[in-house]
Length: 248
Image (cartoon, rainbow, N blue to C red; front, side, top):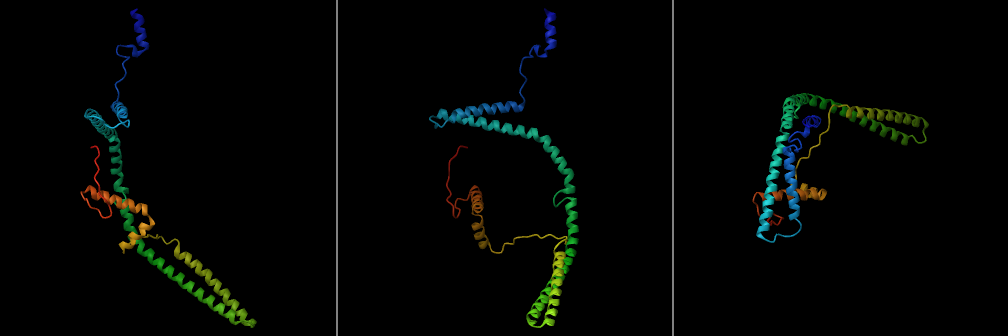
């Protein structure tokens, strides 16, 4: 009989003494179960019926405190569990930041210094190309004007009409040159356009944005009013400040 039992135990390790006991829950499983139980209890209390006695109030208050404390312990466990990952991420960031941190890493700092050299030169070249394109465009415009006037004046005179057609052909050539010059002046410059808004009239800007984005404007002034009330301000122009009692 003893022999048979030993064989069964060898085949099934859980058959040993205590082997049928469930494993201890992990800290997460324990706090999850605690919060789930408290949540279910809260559902029983929060059934739409108001508090009818001090005893009922005290029981609900105790349940709320238990939920609050369980939540704090769950959050502390979360912080503890993710700390190794946070440390790894920080170590990676610290390793790469000196090289590629925006605006402060070696790459951005060096690029910024080189851009300070490249930009004035490129801007000067772009201005020269733009000036040349404008000159050719003006010449083409003048040539077309003269050709148009010559064609108008050549009515009834074949020789003058031929000369006028020649002027028009020359004008068209200049227009094509102007198009090429404009393309050269506006592409491949190594420059990019950056648009910036400079506030010069606050009242006009407020009026414009209120009409352009009223919802975003209202959200902004509401957030500013809420922040002022939190700082203790009790009179906010355009708002009615009311107090409201909520459970602490």
